[in-house]
Length: 285
Image (cartoon, rainbow, N blue to C red; front, top):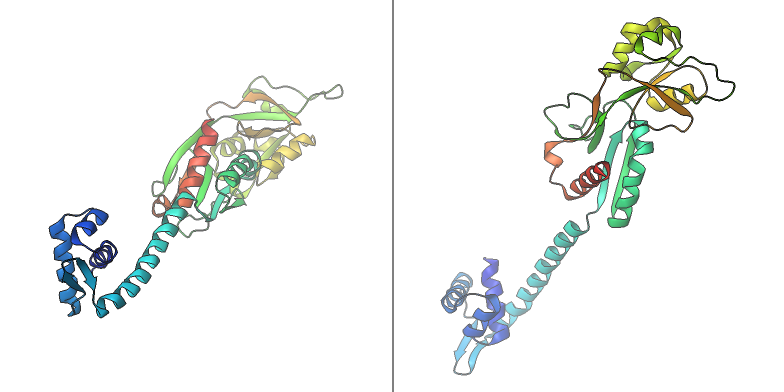
């Protein structure tokens, strides 16, 4: 059964004429007539008496009006819910990023999304390990990388420089202030461990200054905390601000980028697109 035939049938019942029904459903007279004949033929029953005063439902027609109105109400409800859900997205969106990003960048984005789309629940997975987007361990990843995976959809958020940072100087701080990377041999350094070694800047540090590494950590926030405590000097990205640290020296040839990534199958999911756009907007600002 063609639903459009039923909708035309209801219009005839409500208007009492083919001409009125044609205006209501925005079709021409012949189309309305053809749809009514097709419906009667499919059902094998006459639905209207064609009288001089108009189209009057038969007993079968009166019963079909009741059933067709129920169907029409159900279809309208489906349309409302789908449109409403598209305008007001809902559901969970899991975003993974390094701890410094989940602390410094993402909270402001989550706050804005809560105001605009209260039905979206953001889950932040903080960690420097790569969550598998193919296995839906996360819906969106914010990753520092020079070469984002080709099988993912990606947008570059911003460029990142790396800086040598130390505890802010005060009257008692006599620590040296290197003027170039050649002077790093004379200071205590905080190195990377496990997953953080995938970053080129820490590979460079390990290759050139491993003898000066006095402590290691597997996330940037811990490195920053150790530098703030005076353990040593830390290499930190430009997107990470720490109140207790000062930047001394930009590390040459260490520029990277922060990328926004998702799986191609998810790029048109409304709630994910909303979060994606909010992250782009925030970082652009």
